Length: 227
Image (tube, rainbow, N blue to C red; front, side):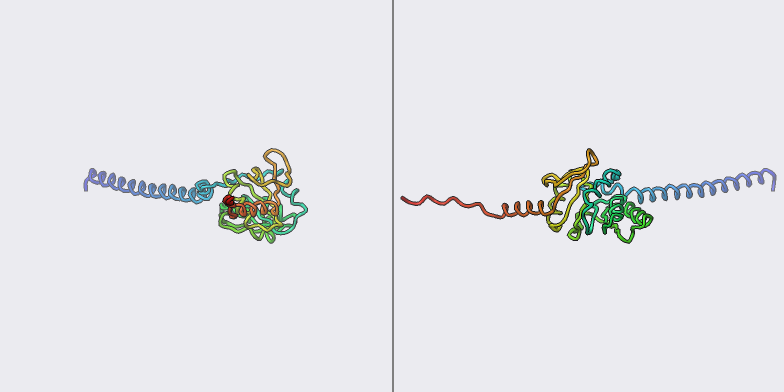
């Protein structure tokens, strides 16, 4: 074989090797990009999905003052406590440290898992529970203390749900936004740290009175008696 043929063969072999290397590199890059996209989707979906619902309950961490105000208005209370939209679990964990059997309901699984881990680290995992659930699909009948960090778009619907489910001995604490028609028995804090306290006996009575007015037929006018 001549030197020219050897040279051509070596060039051809080098090109084949280079193509294989590029192919392998392309597969590696494609795999990395695909894996990154899957991981990004897995992490982002729990945060983005709630925003696509009709009523969004965004995660905004409670301030230290808000937590203190909630505990202050409930300091004389006992029984089971629930935080609706519990976020990173700070209200539930703080309540457990003050003697409550506390539960949190949150739609974002990452926040629920973090809350469980945090409760374990804080030593209150036996008196706390965190659930991945839509608040509209849960009954709160077993709770006598309810904390809610809501948004205005949901508060009127939540009024009806809580009034129909909670026992008459319950107290409801609304943070950041008050309920639209309920009359609070007291408030604590100022500005964004304000909390409103509602008595279930009062708002359940209003609900019952409203239902009575709707179901009671209006009296018909009596015809004039003949003279």
